[in-house]
Length: 486
Image (cartoon, rainbow, N blue to C red):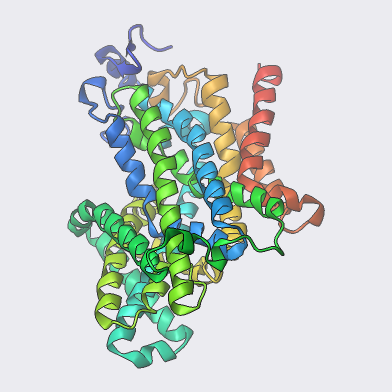
């Protein structure tokens, strides 16, 4: 039983009191500097800060590629823009709901996982988060490798005639850069993070201007380029639903991790308004940039180019190829190390109980990215959007549905902070540290979605992996909570 006055609510925020901390210390606990809730007095994030966070995440090479990839798949620019923005807007519902937990209690995503899955059961969401990080690390490393490939090719033209081997070596070079920064704990990434967003914004504006220049400075001419028109051979509605699910899943991993960011917010309005305003608007912007780049590439070079690093490689000027490729490398490097490589490294270090030094763990985790075969993931726009992203949606959809129902309906946003930190016992300890019903439901629904990839009659499930995972799993868990759980 938790002590009286262990926690107190101040507006939108629940603070742990000194009585609560004393109660926690009576038990074996995992309260430390990393897991401790951020008190209301130390919160300083407001609407603009959350908005800036999403600007940094949305204005990225990956979003550019996904948006332009829909054009290559057969959508018109209006259809693609609508699909991308709608998908990124819908996922804000998940991000805001889970962000509510972070703002109200100042706790992290791992603590939410412990509350829902149990102390030992957190291995499942931890593995999911690690897999997502490793995969996106590999994909972003391949994108950065393309920029390295372009730079070397500008200096040594024969490099461009060596086929996949030179591309793979370029990928390894960029991979090593990422691993070195992550393993050494270099402050360089902090310096680059400060300039990455401005660089991407400048680059994106240049892409729009260049696209207009290829169309004789006529926006109407640019938007009427063939690749921006719908392919008459493609059924839009057959393409739309799996594409929408893929767009939602694209940011699904970030939505899961929102408590890690919103725990800094001063109130719920800051986190909710900041997210719902900035994410759709910036998605619209960077998607439009991708469309201008894709149309400009067709007008200037006669090719359908959906990858910015590849587009840069088509320019005849060595100076342009080198400078813009360096910018792409800087932009990818900062987000890739901090957002994709370090989180799974920290998870691996925790799961191995720090038996290996940090550098060894970093290298081992980074090597796993090779198993993800990012060159296959980016082999075509269709493959990235309709196969790879759906696979990721199959992993994060069910777990997202469980989190939403558990926090909003099972616990009705009321969390006991003392029990949250107990290692043994308390309402979140479940069955010896395992929340068996949650784990069983998560595994069953994930397997069902993956089955849709191989069983034709279930293909519609896989084609809508994230949406199906969130809704179906959420409904089933709600039924369990409402009618079965005692």
